[in-house]
Image (cartoon, rainbow, N blue to C red; front, side, top):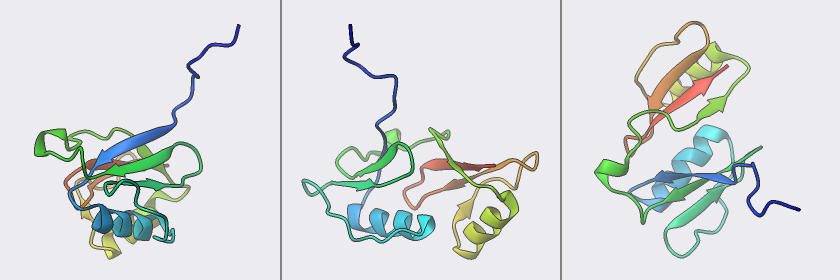
Length: 116
């Protein structure tokens, strides 16, 4: 029998204040065009290699902002990734830890991670 729920992550929701600004920021950081459609006036799905990121301005509330990283962005060069984020004036909340990872905040205060 096929199980009706897959052992697969389809997407990760991130609460954002302004869907257009969040779309533009994430697409710039990830090197993607910000030309996709905003759905229902409050959702933007960022196409990723793997699970999608779903920006959602309808669910934004200060108490829903990620206080710990819910996921990590991958890199194969942690130093280069750190310097790139620094040059983009991204709010870095740690240095490079254990030569392996660092944390940062998006413009809405969500805590995220980059990991090698």
